[in-house]
Image (cartoon, rainbow, N blue to C red; front, side, top):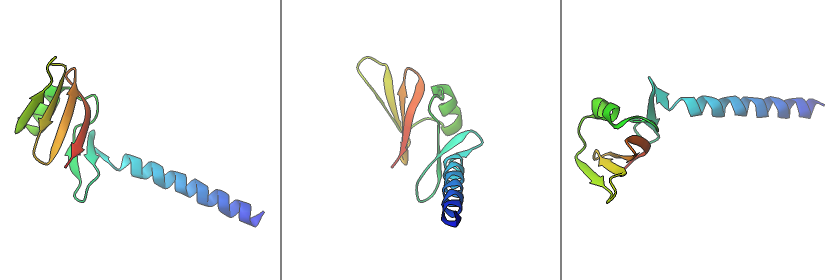
Length: 92
């Protein structure tokens, strides 16, 4: 019984620490990309106009032939858009 209670306590504390880590990457509604130095990147679903307000003009814009998706390169990270909303962002 003693070992079962200890195992339950360990499992419960592990669940709470994972949840805390998952929320630690969002600051003021801006998703923080995991890296050696935390960098803000726009979260999924953010409209491109909001990204422009937050980060300014990108250094490079790549567009597909159908004009449905763009990649905005900011030098240290890229933002991938589909139909004017962020699909994902990656830190380089």
